[in-house]
Image 1 (cartoon, rainbow, N blue to C red):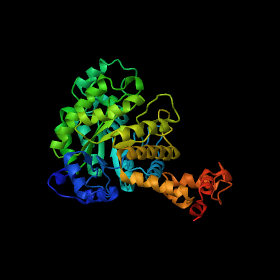
Image 2 (image 1 turned 180 degrees about the vertical axis):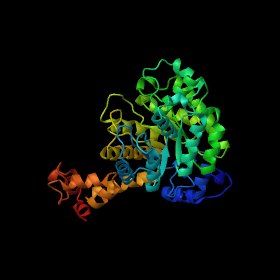
Image 3 (image 1 turned 45 degrees about the horizontal axis):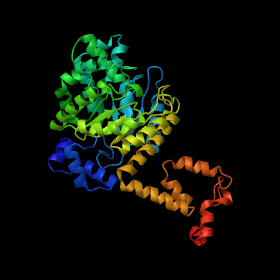
Image 4 (image 1 turned 180 degrees about the horizontal axis):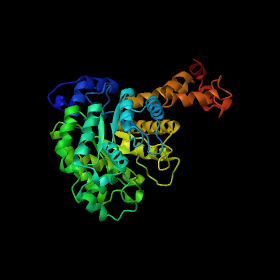
Length: 432
């Protein structure tokens, strides 16, 4: 039985209980939301870890992408990235490896990870085909589904599958006159397969086979946005919306089959359209959890796209996005380093927290209040404990000339809080 099927049968599973405890929400509320499909708990029956939920009424979750490339593959480095991502607060990690011993890399990451693991199975399928000097169109339907089943058996918790790349959505793409075309790696591969074989996408045409595999192992489907905009000029065009409509229909079929499902989204979106994009997805996909990359509201911040994504991600989370895929400083430029991974997670955590404040998540408001009260009484220990990046905060404070005084080097004895205390006779309060 999947989490969705158990929830519909009135059963509160161990995973639901774990989510309830981490969110400080009633287990029955979690069960109800899982049953209706507005919350998913990506947890493969073969993978042991403390479950986390994604969706309605829950804290916004963060995913960190790691993985090798054909030109750079080092397993120890990727495991290091995994450790850094989790330590910085990532709730999930996706292995997007395309170089090296892909089977060993995935197995090692799953066994090493204390958080949910996601993949894009088509990457490994096509990487193997290319290694055999075969072309993308030579991939068979069986090879695609066999790789998905292999990863499900290995313990992958959620998979990105580009089921919305179909003959219909590719027609919409041709009519959209995009500036950048397809920017999704998996989406472009599926499009090439469809065009070269003059056939429908197997993941769409044989969707029932995909659902059978996922149901057997309780793998959550993450329906990939293969036609997401890669520039703000392509946002919300006919191709993106056509694919979204298809994904909404497929999400309904997945739920009917007892399979948990979430929807992936953009991408590059102008700031003024981000809120509307989030609300559109919730309408078209009947409240399915929304997993977004960024979004990025400008195209020109190469080297700083973790900041761009944090700006867009805060607005997205505040307007209904449930799951943010981090963006690192290396986005659009190179494979991220371990330091890039940490920076990307922290930036996304800030965005998620801002979104949670706007969503009315009580624990988020409690955390801000605790920080404010600690600042008011110069309680540095509590400030470090509460802030999103205690490591950096402690380092900055330690390097300060005033690190042993209840001031910072910005204001020193001109500290506004100390002046306020003197003016209003509150010195004792601040000295306690």
